[in-house]
Length: 155
View: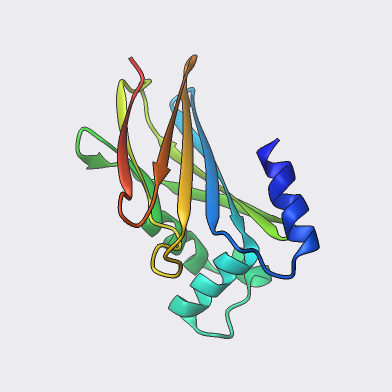
């Protein structure tokens, strides 16, 4: 239901007045599979800030800089160790971009530290919501520039 409101608001306004990313992560068969939803214009602006004004989101899949940018700003730690992620791909639908990542994680975790720094250097009001499902347990982190990591417990 929440994605409906984001799309509806983006259709009637030329620019959005709020800055939020929402990600879903699910542990399944040794992998933590993630989808991050962001506003495409926010993503392109941040990439242009890092890589120059000529950088275009439409060509990002042919460029490893997008993967490096996302994996630098989003991820997980277990027992103090950063999980090494892999950028799987991206889809653009209207004003939203869907970014796909996966992180090898052999066993279902009892705890995970999540971090999502996307766009914190661009927008003071940026919020990043991260939902993580492990087995039947769903935990959520609400991250902001003031609190950019959170430990989630699943047991």
